[in-house]
Image (cartoon, rainbow, N blue to C red; front, side, top):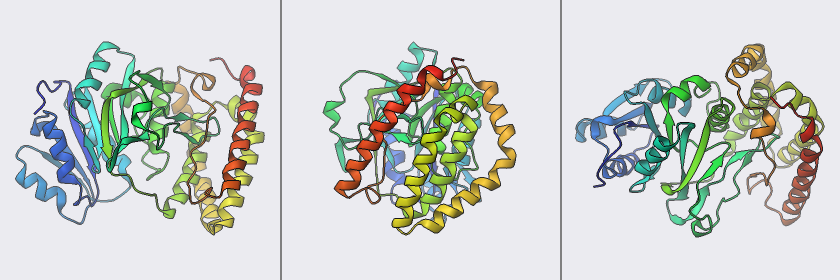
Length: 350
């Protein structure tokens, strides 16, 4: 067992029908030295009985049940709000913590009070020498940036990195900063919910630091097509909610282009109806947009120009798998880089 588990940290594991993975996840946390009484399993309307069975055999573990499945965000918010420690290690029930991970992240937070989120390197559970998430951030058109996806862990190097967004499959979060940034948006169900939350933490003036010495193993699997609805709807809502008005106006030409290209690809792959439903879902969220934007404006310390970036965009292989499509994507990304350089001097400086 790893000694010296940080006294400032408790662990919240969000689980939904995780009978095949939850025991191993909890075992990895216990092996890290975490006392069982500082572990909370937030069960999101599971029907497989796994959380109850585990809580019965692991003395001290707290079980907190949500009766309705609204995605992982409500469970993460419960884990943050109800924590009795100043820092919370949030994790999904398909993640295993490597030894020393939480200790290394806690040391990082102690050393720099401006860091509100400590992010481990996320590797594939079946290929622990290959990265799933590292160097992540927000592209200025509100797409994910993940430059180390499926690259060797050895190439990442040991240097910490200040990043603009992080995957919430495992994060050490300063509770006070999370509350100030507005927590996870529970309307999103899934898709962009972690990017939105961590992006707002950065807008609020805090830092997210990725530490290569801290690693978790994630049982990664391909995402299903049913997520398209949420990914399309939520991306637009995040953009309209979080971005400064000048940013939205300046990037509008490439947003239109991006939306046309995305619609063409989705229709060609048989997802045209889903695309239209997602836009309709966005329209239903718009009445609250003024209040949403005001909430972000109240916490904003850093302007968009300081936190957005331009880089290779993460795209699903089933949508851009053809070599010609991939080549076209690279050309398109080059166009976006040129456009960002063009408008960057015009973006708001505060």
